[in-house]
Image 1: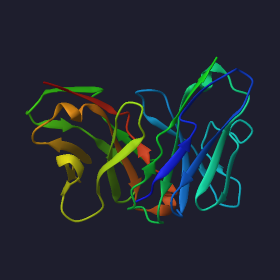
Image 2: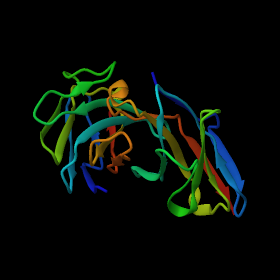
Image 3: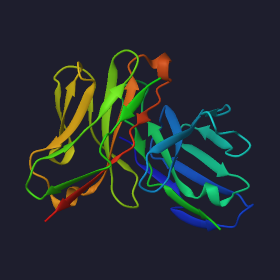
Image 4: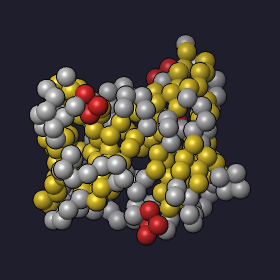
Length: 116
Length: 117
């Protein structure tokens, strides 16, 4: 298993500003992902955070808007840039402790972002 | 492309009664199937998974799920629901063909379970 610490847990931000969300894992993991979730809705994958290289973004998400870093095997950040009210959502960090499709993913508690 | 359908937005059940949350999937190759639960203002918690073998899998908190390959379904069940089971439940699939999906999970839309005393 993996214990994930995600910070901040919530924030209220002004439009046009940026927020960086941190995801810290208590052990080395093979893969890290970032999701977005509207309250009560399903999860949408933003990107896969790759250690030491550029993240792999899903359709509809771009690096300029959601820059991601992953400097090592236990830490990643997601920045939401030039925010607008449409970016108000819950952002979730997820990890796979080991390589293998049969591995269950673990999730952070989420960051609830409100843009005003 | 892989997909998951949870046909019910909400399931209402009386405490002590059986609970079923439906899930059907579409994936290339064999599926790896997962159920997660999300309580208010919390992240997702893993409940159980099907990888291979016995079609009936048992998980946390008394939940179980039955894999049916012919119907491409993986319904979540609990024989006797508790009020504390009220939460949002997600079914997810990943292809056993790693290169086909890059180890990414695809989630269903979620089913809200409300267990009434």
